[in-house]
Length: 255
Image (cartoon, rainbow, N blue to C red; front, side, top):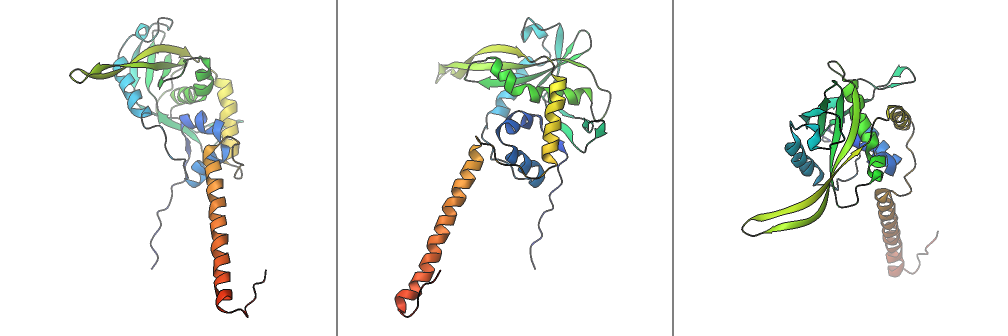
């Protein structure tokens, strides 16, 4: 009696972070994750814990503690899950929704919201970070404005709260700490660009399996490993053919 295989639940939601990292890197890996349940191995074990540390520091604080250029407001929510209604493309609702967990939400004095993503880095905190992360921020904003349950609230701002590690301090008795610089990078709102991005993503997901991304290290690894396995298999096959020939010269190898 063959063992029962666990039936995989068909995925019907898109993770905000995949719209930044996975989409830009490899459409094939994106497609495999959402259609076949095959995900790339995780490689950033400190992302979750460091974001949680940042969330704890800014809970309930006024916006000037984040950045003096932000409008008046208070951090009113942190580390909470959000899920959107089905995404509408060309006037038609799809099966796909946005689902994820944001870092910080600000309620501004005018009643609108700000979505803030916390990041720790060792590189420069420039506008290239906004270019990378804006789709993730816009996905959270979309879900807050179009929640699966309850009333939506307008999101007027999104941005990155960056900590750049610049050193370390401490000793055995006092313990050790990292020292950081802080920078807030505003991403504003890019709702129209997000609609274009998510439309492309859904079109890809509902189509046939795409080609690998040219810079996808995972796909390159899989191809190299498969090539190696094929070469080993060919050697093994040759050995299996040659051994009988050594024992009996009357046997002739043919191809």
